[in-house]
Length: 170
Image (cartoon, rainbow, N blue to C red; front, top):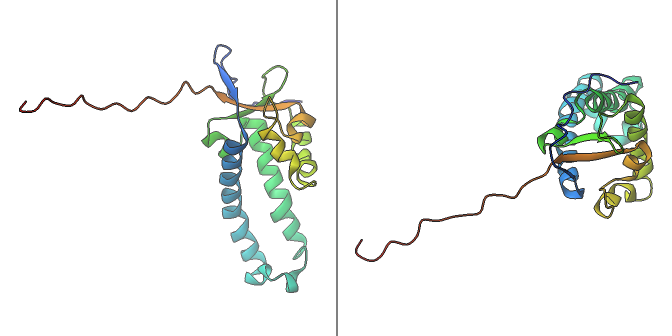
């Protein structure tokens, strides 16, 4: 099952796998954006007491599960399926694609990849750190779903140049 996942990457475009630090930066952007949505919602529903674990426990109530877990999961999955990237990945110019074909990810791949986040997280985040050591920069969640994160290959930053020194008296 697939959805209308944005424009495919041009076939002649040279791509590179996206590494650990760039993906970490993208995740931080996504986390901040999700917090900007989730925090006002839980404060609106539960008030500031929500942030006191002695008063609320693991879940403050039925809406907490929806706001804190279901809404973020649905948002991430929708971005993966329809845009091939979350806002953080878009900010670094990357996309999630099928590891074999480079085609947009399917709904099934997106679901497996999302559930794979929990597998990657459990052993001290080792599945996420794996990105830094894998030849294709795949975390365990990527391997489980058959996906890779790619972006157009950077052809290098323009070198710094200065005007040549002027001769004395010129």
